[in-house]
Image (cartoon, rainbow, N blue to C red; front, top):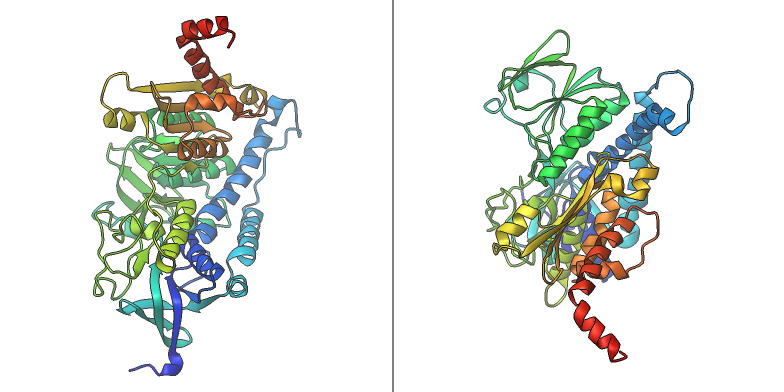
Length: 489
Protein backbone atom coordinates (compact mmCIF):
# COMPACT_ATOMS: atom_id res chain seq x y z
CA UNK A 1 0.00 0.00 0.00
CA UNK A 2 1.16 3.54 -0.72
CA UNK A 3 2.54 5.44 2.25
CA UNK A 4 0.95 8.70 3.27
CA UNK A 5 3.03 11.87 3.30
CA UNK A 6 2.81 11.71 7.11
CA UNK A 7 5.05 8.62 6.94
CA UNK A 8 7.53 10.26 4.56
CA UNK A 9 10.63 12.03 5.82
CA UNK A 10 13.53 13.58 3.96
CA UNK A 11 17.12 14.17 5.02
CA UNK A 12 20.23 15.57 3.38
CA UNK A 13 22.13 12.36 4.15
CA UNK A 14 20.65 8.94 4.88
CA UNK A 15 22.89 6.30 6.46
CA UNK A 16 22.02 2.60 6.41
CA UNK A 17 23.66 0.83 9.37
CA UNK A 18 24.74 2.09 12.77
CA UNK A 19 28.18 0.59 13.28
CA UNK A 20 31.52 2.40 13.21
CA UNK A 21 31.16 3.60 9.60
CA UNK A 22 27.52 4.62 9.94
CA UNK A 23 27.92 6.48 13.22
CA UNK A 24 30.89 8.42 11.91
CA UNK A 25 29.15 9.27 8.63
CA UNK A 26 26.10 10.61 10.44
CA UNK A 27 28.16 12.57 12.95
CA UNK A 28 30.12 14.16 10.10
CA UNK A 29 26.92 15.27 8.39
CA UNK A 30 25.50 16.73 11.58
CA UNK A 31 28.75 18.59 12.25
CA UNK A 32 28.29 20.43 8.96
CA UNK A 33 24.69 21.32 9.74
CA UNK A 34 23.14 18.72 7.45
CA UNK A 35 19.99 16.83 8.33
CA UNK A 36 20.77 13.17 8.70
CA UNK A 37 19.41 9.85 9.99
CA UNK A 38 20.71 6.36 10.66
CA UNK A 39 18.51 3.41 9.76
CA UNK A 40 19.46 0.51 12.03
CA UNK A 41 17.72 -2.84 12.21
CA UNK A 42 19.16 -3.91 15.57
CA UNK A 43 21.14 -1.69 17.93
CA UNK A 44 23.51 1.20 17.32
CA UNK A 45 27.17 0.36 17.90
CA UNK A 46 27.51 -2.48 15.42
CA UNK A 47 29.81 -5.47 15.70
CA UNK A 48 32.53 -3.45 17.41
CA UNK A 49 30.47 -2.62 20.49
CA UNK A 50 28.39 -5.79 20.81
CA UNK A 51 30.25 -8.77 19.30
CA UNK A 52 33.72 -7.58 18.30
CA UNK A 53 36.33 -5.12 19.54
CA UNK A 54 34.82 -4.17 22.88
CA UNK A 55 33.74 -7.55 24.30
CA UNK A 56 36.81 -9.34 22.97
CA UNK A 57 39.23 -6.83 24.51
CA UNK A 58 37.29 -6.91 27.80
CA UNK A 59 37.53 -10.72 27.81
CA UNK A 60 41.22 -10.58 26.92
CA UNK A 61 41.82 -8.22 29.84
CA UNK A 62 40.26 -10.70 32.27
CA UNK A 63 42.31 -13.49 30.72
CA UNK A 64 45.50 -11.42 30.99
CA UNK A 65 44.79 -10.82 34.66
CA UNK A 66 44.37 -14.55 35.32
CA UNK A 67 47.60 -15.25 33.44
CA UNK A 68 49.46 -12.58 35.43
CA UNK A 69 48.39 -14.17 38.73
CA UNK A 70 49.70 -17.54 37.59
CA UNK A 71 53.04 -16.00 36.57
CA UNK A 72 53.40 -13.74 39.60
CA UNK A 73 56.01 -15.96 41.31
CA UNK A 74 58.41 -15.19 38.47
CA UNK A 75 58.32 -11.56 39.63
CA UNK A 76 58.84 -12.37 43.30
CA UNK A 77 55.15 -11.99 44.13
CA UNK A 78 53.04 -14.79 45.62
CA UNK A 79 49.44 -15.11 46.69
CA UNK A 80 50.04 -18.50 48.25
CA UNK A 81 49.26 -21.85 46.72
CA UNK A 82 45.60 -21.07 46.02
CA UNK A 83 44.76 -21.90 42.38
CA UNK A 84 43.46 -19.11 40.14
CA UNK A 85 39.66 -19.04 40.25
CA UNK A 86 37.72 -17.52 37.36
CA UNK A 87 34.11 -16.51 37.90
CA UNK A 88 32.77 -16.41 34.36
CA UNK A 89 29.54 -14.75 35.44
CA UNK A 90 31.50 -11.83 36.87
CA UNK A 91 33.71 -11.75 33.81
CA UNK A 92 30.57 -11.44 31.69
CA UNK A 93 29.08 -8.81 34.02
CA UNK A 94 32.20 -6.69 33.61
CA UNK A 95 32.12 -7.15 29.86
CA UNK A 96 28.48 -6.04 29.66
CA UNK A 97 29.15 -3.08 31.94
CA UNK A 98 31.91 -1.88 29.62
CA UNK A 99 29.72 -2.35 26.54
CA UNK A 100 26.87 -0.38 28.07
CA UNK A 101 29.16 2.43 29.22
CA UNK A 102 30.61 2.87 25.72
CA UNK A 103 27.16 2.60 24.15
CA UNK A 104 25.59 5.16 26.47
CA UNK A 105 28.55 7.55 26.14
CA UNK A 106 29.10 7.35 22.38
CA UNK A 107 26.56 5.35 20.39
CA UNK A 108 23.04 5.46 21.82
CA UNK A 109 20.10 7.12 20.01
CA UNK A 110 19.97 9.68 22.83
CA UNK A 111 23.60 10.68 22.22
CA UNK A 112 23.03 10.80 18.47
CA UNK A 113 19.92 12.94 18.92
CA UNK A 114 21.92 15.52 20.91
CA UNK A 115 24.31 15.68 17.96
CA UNK A 116 21.45 16.22 15.53
CA UNK A 117 21.18 12.69 14.19
CA UNK A 118 17.85 10.86 14.11
CA UNK A 119 17.78 7.09 14.60
CA UNK A 120 15.16 5.09 12.71
CA UNK A 121 14.69 1.50 13.83
CA UNK A 122 13.90 -0.94 11.07
CA UNK A 123 15.10 -2.70 7.93
CA UNK A 124 15.81 -0.56 4.88
CA UNK A 125 15.08 -1.46 1.28
CA UNK A 126 15.67 0.55 -1.88
CA UNK A 127 12.72 1.96 -3.83
CA UNK A 128 14.96 4.15 -6.02
CA UNK A 129 18.42 5.66 -5.98
CA UNK A 130 17.31 8.30 -3.44
CA UNK A 131 14.33 6.66 -1.73
CA UNK A 132 14.18 3.95 0.91
CA UNK A 133 11.36 2.08 2.58
CA UNK A 134 11.86 1.15 6.22
CA UNK A 135 9.95 -1.67 7.89
CA UNK A 136 10.11 -1.48 11.67
CA UNK A 137 8.23 -2.53 14.77
CA UNK A 138 6.38 0.79 14.74
CA UNK A 139 5.27 0.43 11.13
CA UNK A 140 6.52 1.49 7.71
CA UNK A 141 8.03 4.75 6.54
CA UNK A 142 9.42 6.29 3.40
CA UNK A 143 12.81 8.01 3.61
CA UNK A 144 14.06 10.37 0.92
CA UNK A 145 17.73 11.33 0.63
CA UNK A 146 18.14 14.85 -0.72
CA UNK A 147 21.89 14.65 -1.30
CA UNK A 148 22.89 11.03 -0.94
CA UNK A 149 22.90 7.65 0.81
CA UNK A 150 25.82 5.94 2.56
CA UNK A 151 25.54 2.17 3.01
CA UNK A 152 27.33 1.00 6.17
CA UNK A 153 25.86 -2.45 6.78
CA UNK A 154 29.09 -4.06 7.99
CA UNK A 155 29.87 -7.76 7.87
CA UNK A 156 28.66 -10.96 9.50
CA UNK A 157 30.20 -14.21 10.66
CA UNK A 158 30.85 -16.80 7.97
CA UNK A 159 28.88 -19.92 8.82
CA UNK A 160 30.22 -22.89 6.84
CA UNK A 161 27.67 -25.09 5.12
CA UNK A 162 27.42 -28.85 5.44
CA UNK A 163 29.29 -29.08 2.14
CA UNK A 164 32.31 -27.44 3.79
CA UNK A 165 32.14 -29.08 7.22
CA UNK A 166 29.90 -32.13 7.16
CA UNK A 167 27.44 -32.31 10.06
CA UNK A 168 28.17 -28.86 11.45
CA UNK A 169 24.45 -28.10 11.61
CA UNK A 170 23.95 -31.13 13.87
CA UNK A 171 25.75 -29.45 16.78
CA UNK A 172 25.16 -26.16 18.55
CA UNK A 173 28.21 -24.20 17.43
CA UNK A 174 29.16 -20.61 18.23
CA UNK A 175 30.68 -17.79 16.22
CA UNK A 176 32.03 -14.50 17.54
CA UNK A 177 28.44 -13.27 17.39
CA UNK A 178 27.37 -15.65 20.20
CA UNK A 179 30.52 -16.56 22.14
CA UNK A 180 30.38 -13.53 24.44
CA UNK A 181 27.01 -14.68 25.75
CA UNK A 182 28.69 -17.56 27.60
CA UNK A 183 28.40 -17.20 31.37
CA UNK A 184 30.04 -20.53 32.19
CA UNK A 185 33.58 -21.40 31.21
CA UNK A 186 33.74 -24.32 28.72
CA UNK A 187 35.79 -27.17 30.12
CA UNK A 188 36.90 -28.14 26.61
CA UNK A 189 36.74 -25.58 23.80
CA UNK A 190 37.35 -26.41 20.16
CA UNK A 191 38.29 -23.40 18.02
CA UNK A 192 38.08 -23.75 14.25
CA UNK A 193 40.25 -21.16 12.54
CA UNK A 194 43.65 -19.52 12.96
CA UNK A 195 42.85 -15.92 12.04
CA UNK A 196 42.74 -12.92 14.41
CA UNK A 197 39.42 -13.92 16.01
CA UNK A 198 40.41 -17.56 16.40
CA UNK A 199 43.78 -16.66 17.92
CA UNK A 200 42.51 -14.01 20.33
CA UNK A 201 39.74 -16.22 21.67
CA UNK A 202 41.88 -19.38 21.82
CA UNK A 203 44.38 -17.59 24.05
CA UNK A 204 41.69 -15.83 26.10
CA UNK A 205 39.77 -18.99 26.99
CA UNK A 206 42.95 -20.96 27.59
CA UNK A 207 44.16 -18.34 30.08
CA UNK A 208 40.76 -18.29 31.75
CA UNK A 209 41.04 -22.03 32.32
CA UNK A 210 39.49 -23.89 29.39
CA UNK A 211 41.31 -26.73 27.68
CA UNK A 212 41.54 -25.29 24.18
CA UNK A 213 42.17 -27.18 20.97
CA UNK A 214 42.68 -24.93 17.95
CA UNK A 215 42.27 -26.47 14.52
CA UNK A 216 44.10 -24.40 11.91
CA UNK A 217 46.71 -25.13 9.26
CA UNK A 218 48.52 -21.87 10.13
CA UNK A 219 48.19 -19.08 12.68
CA UNK A 220 47.66 -15.60 11.25
CA UNK A 221 48.50 -16.89 7.78
CA UNK A 222 48.28 -13.49 6.07
CA UNK A 223 51.05 -12.08 8.29
CA UNK A 224 54.83 -12.37 7.93
CA UNK A 225 56.09 -15.97 8.38
CA UNK A 226 57.99 -14.88 11.52
CA UNK A 227 54.63 -13.98 13.07
CA UNK A 228 53.29 -17.48 12.59
CA UNK A 229 56.39 -19.02 14.16
CA UNK A 230 56.35 -16.63 17.10
CA UNK A 231 52.69 -17.16 17.91
CA UNK A 232 52.94 -20.92 17.53
CA UNK A 233 55.69 -20.87 20.16
CA UNK A 234 53.64 -18.66 22.48
CA UNK A 235 50.52 -20.83 22.19
CA UNK A 236 52.50 -24.02 22.69
CA UNK A 237 54.11 -22.58 25.82
CA UNK A 238 50.74 -21.52 27.22
CA UNK A 239 49.17 -24.92 26.57
CA UNK A 240 46.85 -24.20 23.64
CA UNK A 241 46.62 -27.52 21.85
CA UNK A 242 46.98 -27.20 18.09
CA UNK A 243 46.05 -29.45 15.21
CA UNK A 244 47.57 -28.34 11.90
CA UNK A 245 44.68 -29.41 9.75
CA UNK A 246 41.12 -28.50 8.75
CA UNK A 247 37.82 -29.83 10.06
CA UNK A 248 36.23 -32.40 7.78
CA UNK A 249 33.17 -33.29 9.86
CA UNK A 250 31.45 -32.67 13.17
CA UNK A 251 28.99 -34.89 15.00
CA UNK A 252 27.19 -34.77 18.37
CA UNK A 253 28.84 -36.47 21.33
CA UNK A 254 27.49 -37.31 24.75
CA UNK A 255 25.22 -34.61 26.18
CA UNK A 256 25.96 -31.31 24.48
CA UNK A 257 29.51 -32.27 23.52
CA UNK A 258 30.82 -32.72 19.99
CA UNK A 259 33.33 -34.79 18.05
CA UNK A 260 35.31 -33.12 15.28
CA UNK A 261 37.18 -35.21 12.71
CA UNK A 262 40.01 -33.41 10.95
CA UNK A 263 41.27 -33.90 7.41
CA UNK A 264 44.43 -35.55 8.74
CA UNK A 265 42.34 -38.08 10.71
CA UNK A 266 42.73 -36.39 14.09
CA UNK A 267 39.77 -36.63 16.44
CA UNK A 268 38.83 -33.80 18.80
CA UNK A 269 36.20 -34.03 21.52
CA UNK A 270 34.92 -30.85 23.12
CA UNK A 271 32.06 -29.26 25.00
CA UNK A 272 31.78 -26.03 22.99
CA UNK A 273 32.85 -25.44 19.41
CA UNK A 274 33.70 -21.96 18.17
CA UNK A 275 33.78 -21.47 14.41
CA UNK A 276 36.02 -18.54 13.57
CA UNK A 277 36.63 -18.71 9.83
CA UNK A 278 36.15 -15.07 8.95
CA UNK A 279 33.49 -12.48 8.19
CA UNK A 280 31.57 -11.78 4.99
CA UNK A 281 30.19 -8.42 3.80
CA UNK A 282 26.56 -7.90 4.76
CA UNK A 283 24.88 -6.88 1.49
CA UNK A 284 21.44 -8.38 2.04
CA UNK A 285 19.51 -5.21 1.23
CA UNK A 286 16.32 -5.53 -0.79
CA UNK A 287 16.41 -3.55 -4.03
CA UNK A 288 20.17 -2.93 -3.86
CA UNK A 289 20.94 -4.45 -7.25
CA UNK A 290 17.71 -3.14 -8.76
CA UNK A 291 18.88 0.46 -8.38
CA UNK A 292 22.20 -0.36 -10.03
CA UNK A 293 24.59 -1.02 -7.13
CA UNK A 294 27.07 -3.73 -8.07
CA UNK A 295 29.08 -6.23 -6.02
CA UNK A 296 32.81 -6.88 -6.37
CA UNK A 297 34.91 -10.05 -6.44
CA UNK A 298 35.04 -10.01 -2.61
CA UNK A 299 31.23 -10.15 -2.54
CA UNK A 300 31.14 -6.66 -1.09
CA UNK A 301 29.62 -3.48 -2.49
CA UNK A 302 31.76 -2.26 -5.37
CA UNK A 303 33.08 1.28 -4.85
CA UNK A 304 35.63 3.52 -6.51
CA UNK A 305 38.47 5.30 -4.73
CA UNK A 306 36.02 7.91 -3.38
CA UNK A 307 33.70 5.18 -2.03
CA UNK A 308 31.02 5.91 -4.64
CA UNK A 309 29.11 2.94 -6.00
CA UNK A 310 28.01 2.59 -9.63
CA UNK A 311 25.08 4.85 -8.71
CA UNK A 312 25.90 8.56 -8.53
CA UNK A 313 24.50 9.44 -5.09
CA UNK A 314 24.95 6.11 -3.35
CA UNK A 315 28.18 5.51 -1.44
CA UNK A 316 29.35 2.61 0.76
CA UNK A 317 31.84 2.49 3.63
CA UNK A 318 33.37 -0.05 5.97
CA UNK A 319 33.20 -3.83 6.01
CA UNK A 320 30.28 -4.04 3.57
CA UNK A 321 32.67 -3.10 0.74
CA UNK A 322 34.80 -6.21 1.25
CA UNK A 323 37.87 -4.07 1.98
CA UNK A 324 40.03 -4.55 5.09
CA UNK A 325 37.75 -5.18 8.07
CA UNK A 326 38.83 -2.83 10.85
CA UNK A 327 36.76 -0.53 13.03
CA UNK A 328 39.21 2.34 12.62
CA UNK A 329 39.20 1.99 8.84
CA UNK A 330 35.39 1.76 8.74
CA UNK A 331 35.12 4.92 10.82
CA UNK A 332 37.53 6.72 8.52
CA UNK A 333 35.63 5.59 5.44
CA UNK A 334 32.30 6.62 6.95
CA UNK A 335 33.54 10.17 7.43
CA UNK A 336 35.08 10.31 3.94
CA UNK A 337 31.93 8.93 2.30
CA UNK A 338 29.77 11.54 4.04
CA UNK A 339 32.26 14.26 3.12
CA UNK A 340 32.25 13.21 -0.55
CA UNK A 341 28.45 13.20 -0.66
CA UNK A 342 27.96 16.56 1.02
CA UNK A 343 30.96 18.74 0.17
CA UNK A 344 32.59 19.84 -3.10
CA UNK A 345 35.53 17.90 -4.57
CA UNK A 346 36.46 14.53 -3.03
CA UNK A 347 38.88 12.86 -0.66
CA UNK A 348 40.28 9.32 -1.12
CA UNK A 349 38.42 6.72 0.86
CA UNK A 350 40.36 3.58 -0.07
CA UNK A 351 43.80 3.41 1.54
CA UNK A 352 46.72 1.04 1.08
CA UNK A 353 48.53 1.64 4.37
CA UNK A 354 45.96 0.64 6.99
CA UNK A 355 47.42 -0.50 10.33
CA UNK A 356 46.13 -3.78 11.74
CA UNK A 357 46.50 -5.27 15.21
CA UNK A 358 45.61 -8.68 16.59
CA UNK A 359 45.34 -8.27 20.36
CA UNK A 360 46.88 -11.51 21.48
CA UNK A 361 49.70 -11.48 24.05
CA UNK A 362 52.03 -10.43 22.56
CA UNK A 363 50.11 -8.22 20.16
CA UNK A 364 50.68 -8.57 16.42
CA UNK A 365 50.60 -5.32 14.46
CA UNK A 366 51.43 -4.43 10.88
CA UNK A 367 51.13 -1.66 8.32
CA UNK A 368 52.09 -1.32 4.67
CA UNK A 369 53.91 -4.01 2.70
CA UNK A 370 55.28 -7.29 3.99
CA UNK A 371 58.79 -8.29 2.95
CA UNK A 372 57.41 -10.66 0.32
CA UNK A 373 55.06 -8.02 -1.08
CA UNK A 374 57.85 -5.44 -1.19
CA UNK A 375 60.23 -7.76 -3.03
CA UNK A 376 57.52 -8.67 -5.52
CA UNK A 377 56.79 -4.99 -6.15
CA UNK A 378 60.43 -3.89 -6.36
CA UNK A 379 62.05 -6.80 -8.16
CA UNK A 380 65.53 -5.34 -8.72
CA UNK A 381 68.09 -6.96 -6.42
CA UNK A 382 69.27 -4.76 -3.59
CA UNK A 383 66.31 -2.39 -3.78
CA UNK A 384 64.75 -3.58 -0.52
CA UNK A 385 66.34 -3.86 2.91
CA UNK A 386 65.01 -5.22 6.19
CA UNK A 387 65.73 -4.00 9.72
CA UNK A 388 65.03 -6.66 12.33
CA UNK A 389 65.25 -6.68 16.12
CA UNK A 390 64.19 -9.34 18.61
CA UNK A 391 62.01 -8.05 21.43
CA UNK A 392 64.16 -9.90 23.97
CA UNK A 393 66.90 -7.42 23.07
CA UNK A 394 64.74 -4.42 24.02
CA UNK A 395 65.51 -3.18 27.54
CA UNK A 396 61.88 -2.55 28.50
CA UNK A 397 60.92 -6.07 27.43
CA UNK A 398 63.78 -7.45 29.53
CA UNK A 399 62.49 -5.53 32.56
CA UNK A 400 59.03 -7.03 32.08
CA UNK A 401 60.21 -10.56 31.18
CA UNK A 402 58.57 -10.29 27.77
CA UNK A 403 60.79 -12.32 25.47
CA UNK A 404 58.50 -13.25 22.57
CA UNK A 405 58.32 -11.10 19.48
CA UNK A 406 60.25 -8.86 17.13
CA UNK A 407 60.28 -5.60 15.18
CA UNK A 408 60.64 -5.85 11.41
CA UNK A 409 60.78 -2.80 9.17
CA UNK A 410 60.90 -2.93 5.38
CA UNK A 411 62.50 0.03 3.61
CA UNK A 412 64.15 1.08 0.35
CA UNK A 413 67.90 0.56 0.55
CA UNK A 414 69.02 3.84 -1.00
CA UNK A 415 66.30 6.31 -0.01
CA UNK A 416 65.36 4.79 3.37
CA UNK A 417 61.66 5.14 2.47
CA UNK A 418 59.60 2.99 4.84
CA UNK A 419 57.42 0.53 2.93
CA UNK A 420 55.97 -1.48 5.79
CA UNK A 421 56.46 -2.93 9.23
CA UNK A 422 55.41 -5.81 11.44
CA UNK A 423 55.74 -5.74 15.22
CA UNK A 424 55.09 -8.57 17.65
CA UNK A 425 55.25 -7.12 21.15
CA UNK A 426 53.31 -6.25 24.26
CA UNK A 427 52.92 -2.71 22.89
CA UNK A 428 52.75 -3.51 19.17
CA UNK A 429 49.35 -1.88 18.66
CA UNK A 430 50.72 1.40 20.01
CA UNK A 431 54.11 1.21 18.30
CA UNK A 432 52.69 0.58 14.83
CA UNK A 433 50.95 3.98 14.88
CA UNK A 434 54.36 5.69 14.84
CA UNK A 435 55.27 3.80 11.68
CA UNK A 436 51.89 4.73 10.17
CA UNK A 437 52.58 8.40 10.82
CA UNK A 438 56.08 8.09 9.35
CA UNK A 439 54.73 6.48 6.18
CA UNK A 440 51.98 9.08 5.82
CA UNK A 441 54.40 11.96 6.42
CA UNK A 442 56.94 10.39 4.05
CA UNK A 443 59.51 10.44 6.87
CA UNK A 444 62.55 8.38 6.00
CA UNK A 445 63.51 5.55 8.33
CA UNK A 446 66.87 7.03 9.30
CA UNK A 447 65.16 10.32 10.24
CA UNK A 448 63.40 8.55 13.11
CA UNK A 449 66.78 8.58 14.83
CA UNK A 450 66.44 12.36 15.23
CA UNK A 451 63.04 12.07 16.91
CA UNK A 452 63.56 11.78 20.65
CA UNK A 453 61.86 8.80 22.29
CA UNK A 454 61.54 8.29 26.01
CA UNK A 455 63.62 5.52 27.55
CA UNK A 456 62.95 2.75 28.41
CA UNK A 457 59.76 2.65 26.38
CA UNK A 458 59.14 -0.13 23.89
CA UNK A 459 59.10 2.44 21.09
CA UNK A 460 62.65 3.55 21.99
CA UNK A 461 63.69 0.46 20.01
CA UNK A 462 62.43 2.18 16.85
CA UNK A 463 64.76 5.12 17.42
CA UNK A 464 67.65 2.75 18.15
CA UNK A 465 67.03 0.81 14.93
CA UNK A 466 66.83 4.05 12.94
CA UNK A 467 70.04 5.28 14.57
CA UNK A 468 71.96 2.34 13.11
CA UNK A 469 70.95 3.50 9.62
CA UNK A 470 71.71 7.10 10.48
CA UNK A 471 75.26 6.20 11.53
CA UNK A 472 75.72 4.05 8.42
CA UNK A 473 74.65 6.99 6.31
CA UNK A 474 77.23 9.25 7.97
CA UNK A 475 79.95 6.63 7.47
CA UNK A 476 79.03 6.42 3.79
CA UNK A 477 79.88 10.11 3.44
CA UNK A 478 82.86 10.02 5.82
CA UNK A 479 85.29 11.38 3.23
CA UNK A 480 83.06 14.25 2.22
CA UNK A 481 82.30 15.12 5.84
CA UNK A 482 86.03 15.15 6.70
CA UNK A 483 86.71 17.50 3.79
CA UNK A 484 83.90 19.87 4.85
CA UNK A 485 85.24 19.81 8.40
CA UNK A 486 88.67 20.93 7.18
CA UNK A 487 86.97 23.83 5.44
CA UNK A 488 85.59 24.87 8.80
CA UNK A 489 82.03 24.01 7.93
